[in-house]
Amino acid sequence: MTSSTATRSTNHSRTLQLVQTAMFAALMMVGANISSFLIIGGVPITLQTFFAILAGLLLGKRNGAIAMLVYALIGLAGLPVFAGFSGGFDTIVSPTFGFIVSFILVAYFVGLIVEKYPTKVGFVIAALVGTAINYLFGTNWMYAAYKVWAAAPEGFTYQMAWAWMAVPLPKDLLLAVLAGLFGYRLRPIIQKYL
Image 1 (spheres, rainbow, N blue to C red):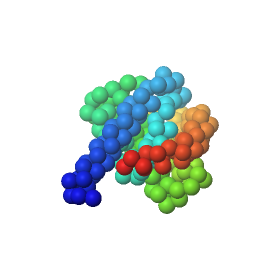
Image 2 (cartoon, one colour; image 1 turned 30 degrees about the horizontal axis):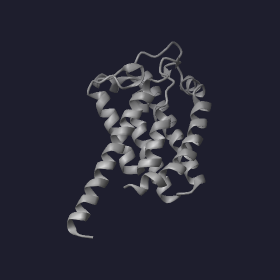
Image 3 (cartoon, rainbow, N blue to C red; image 1 turned 90 degrees about the horizontal axis):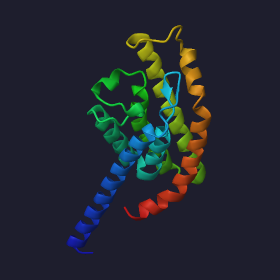
């Protein structure tokens, strides 16, 4: 392989990684609003966790986390890409902003797990761990927000925060398993072109 061939190959790989990263940021924008008109408690029901998990499974820890960071920054810059077509820097004080932050962690740790355990079971476990990270970080942020700076609903408790999360949990667990199986089948195809 000549030097120019290696350079072209590296540039091609970087271009594909950039396109895939942008694609997952765009999928997050769609996933945030495809079903966000259904709100349970203070939590919109979306497909964001599914796409954050897929980003980690398919792009790996680094590029998956970068895709989620790009998504968060686009929303913070003011584009209406978060659930309910919201956006802007003031989103940081929203009780649900912790879920947005969690997507970066989800993609990173899901990618890390599948790098260490690239089996079908490893992919499904990684997806379920990603869901747990999303719920733990997001729900605790929401609770803290309502207790410290946001106007809490009457009688709001830690148990109430988790009760709200019980509604989307079955959907998110099912989607996590599907993402794990889907990611296991797709990752070799995507890796072939990088």
